[in-house]
Length: 99
Image (cartoon, rainbow, N blue to C red; front, side, top):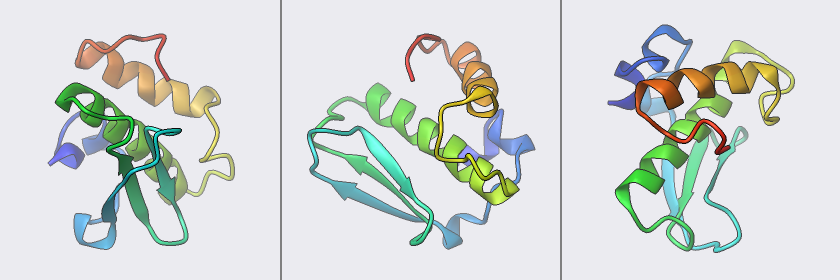
């Protein structure tokens, strides 16, 4: 469903059946994207509220989109990442300073 929302509906996203989702319990991270497994992981050890889970999911989806697009720096929080994050932060009223 998030792939159908802006800005992801304009980005090269894989079919949802090609991406795995996994809940982990690592209290040191909110989430991560594993390109080898094509898996987005969200940590129940750090995310306890819907807003935090949703923000983390969108964050990891940016990494996924950059990976699918073929960007070598898909795992970084550089200008390409921040441009997309800034769009969804404004659209969904998220803290623009949060990464």
